[in-house]
Length: 97
Image (cartoon, rainbow, N blue to C red; front, side):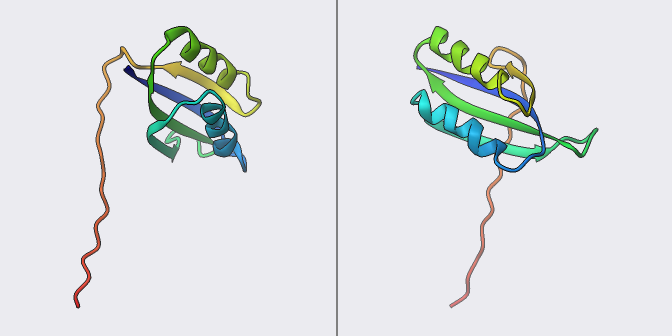
């Protein structure tokens, strides 16, 4: 299996993240990493990045096309083969007993 990374720019609307993740569920993809943030240049847009594992490239490209057909999606790109800086963030809380 090959890890694939998708970058989606969407309008900030209620339920858009749920609809997009529903497409991943419908196609039986397990999401390995998900990050969503308000787009810096325009506050009415959000940027969503998803990392998943894909066996079949054709099936994955079909998923990308279906994401692109969604109403609130501005653009979608498969950025697997592009140079990307990936960072992980962990939030840890220490509790004293």
